[in-house]
Image (spheres, helix red, strand yellow):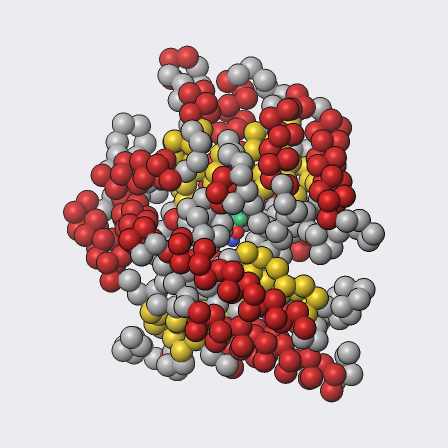
Amino acid sequence: MTARPNYDLTTIRQQDLKHHFHPFTDFASFKDTGSMIFTGAEGAYVVDGEGRRYLDGIGGLWCVNIGYGREEMAEAMAQQARQMVYYSSFGHHTSVPAAQLAAKIAELAPGSLNHVFYGSGGSVANDTAVRMIHFYFNRLGQRSKKKIITRHDGYHGSTYLTMSMTGVAFDHIGFDLVGDGLIHRVSSPNTYRRPEGMSEAEFLEHLIGEFRAKIEELGAENVAAFFAEPIQGAGGVVVPPKGYHRRMADVCREFGVLYVADEVVTAFGRLGHFFASESVFDMVPDIITSAKGLSSAYAPLSATIISDELYDVLSVPQAEGAMFTHGFTYSGHPVCCAAGLKNIEIMEREDLCGHVREVGPYFETRLKELQALPLVGDVRGSHFMLCVENVADKGTKALLAPEIAIGKRIASECQKRGVLVRPIGHLNVLSPPLTLTRQEIDVLVDALATSISVVADDLTREGVR
Ligand code: PMP
């Protein structure tokens, strides 16, 4: 399983340090410590250059849903690369896997979401959705309908547009936001941090009222779409109050606003279904964007999936005026689509969604036990998308100072115990491969529990708490 080294790790470390500009990286610590070099992976485990093995509680980046090292994935991709590695899907060209995968996604997607536009990642899928929406309303002659509403703590990507749509304040520091009045925001449906004295039911009404008021303030004739993750991911694994998405969708319908479900994380099994919108949240959006688990990260692939109604307007004959002039060299890349097809075949054959539905509640229950530990303010999430929120004071929910980097400290304690969990600010996030057994869940949760206790004791010793 461990790759036979045909390189010198010290050289790799230097090359990486000198020339590899890493995304989302604190360069202070990076320049001190360099990178952890991954050299092997199998099942739910990854291996570093020194041969240490870790249970991957992060699933790469919420994406390696079927787990690592699947021979038949490598074979399907290699086979496609040998057979016909690439042709563009512009115009009237296609490939066998691009067509087959589109049909398969349409079969799995809810409602009339029958049309798939391919890209290479979640940001591209969301950017594509905005271009579709603007083109759609222009075609309908509703040219003022352009504004996009997103939510605080929503994450939609890293292109300039999708970063601007993102509501994670930290991601905006040092940048300007594009769009000049294009993007507007409403609250995150975070029940843990809801206003003092408000019940969950009142909070729901508050959120719905706020959304309605925002549309009225902007003018429904100016509002094109609402973008929302079914469960907010990078913004803190925020599970909305029951009924939230349905109610928000009702408001959208009332005002002629399109609902885009950003299922980049939640689709392809993480919540126990191929798509969460209808199966978990009882609503059918106008557009679903997905990536990550679509290919389980074996190849870069995303899908912007749209309804019949949108497709009818967007698939305009060029002779009638504008054509939908949008697309990427790698839209529908045959090797990536072959990976997507094989990934879905594996998920269905092994009933990974059923496994997540069966084991997910156990995972949640086990993680909830951590609520009793010092530092743990909240444990939340659903199935294979979970998070622990660390706080300085459980009563007031006050946070520890950012320089303590509590999430990172706990994650590095976990690492010493052979387990990877993701630090996001004061949070620790879990999104492992969907293949995890109960025993592996125990290993993951036990390591996290011990790590939190160790860090809590250290902080006490240091006089921080
Ligand atoms: N939407 C959501 C909900 C995401 O979590 C992410 C990535 N974490 C994206 C969009 C952007 O995807 P990518 O990084 O593949 O561009």
